[in-house]
Image (cartoon, rainbow, N blue to C red):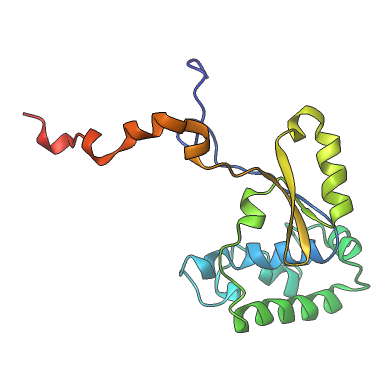
Length: 173
């Protein structure tokens, strides 16, 4: 950008996460298909025609959005029927177990998978991997930015952010 500004207002909100093609990919697919459930738009992903759930359970003959052969291969299924019935079960399990709430693992991590996968991804990033930590989280690993508190970064300058230093725009004469 012209003024070299960064942040959600100045940049796109897109975030890519490298995901290992195993149970982590299963979990991510279910997580994505539950986005509209989390948003309160629908109670089940089958009610949202723009997610992959319906296409996985009832593959399209024409104009498919999903590479069925690639997906089957990544998830180690012999047929789309097997994948569809299993996937429907995963979604039902996530809904029944209240396992459909927001999880920063999918939206804030650089990589998600086994420790070896995440460590290899960090090494492959080279300089861009510096300052990122491999974190164990509920049976998987994530590569994330280290979370430093503002106090640690700002030190004494943090005192400038007190309530006495507020100025409300409504009070402008």
